[in-house]
Image 1 (spheres, rainbow, N blue to C red):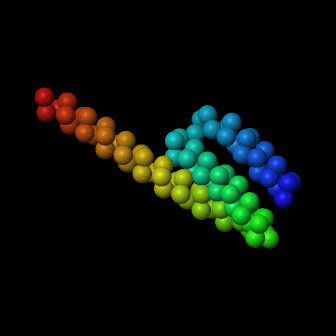
Image 2 (tube, rainbow, N blue to C red):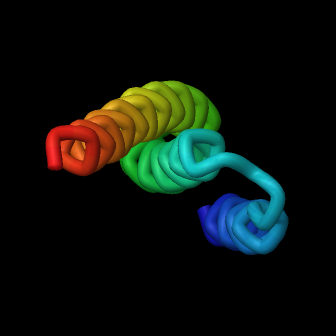
Image 3 (cartoon, helix red, strand yellow):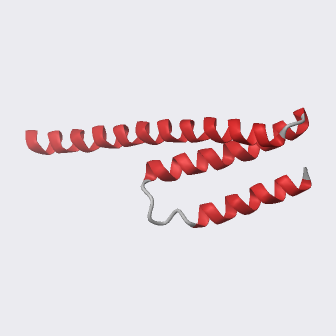
Length: 90
């Protein structure tokens, strides 16, 4: 269990520092995946299979991060369109 936690934290640290050139959605997807994998590994370790927990948690976290990123993109696009419409009507 201790080795898995150290490994997950090391991977998390390495990947978070490499986010500089990524889009916001890609960053959210990666962060969700890493967080999900870490949480899944901990829960899986308690249940008896840390690897399976990390795999499932990572997949769910990545999907959640991607969907949240797409939602924020759509929100920003709607905001920008509203600003453009307001300027046009003046």
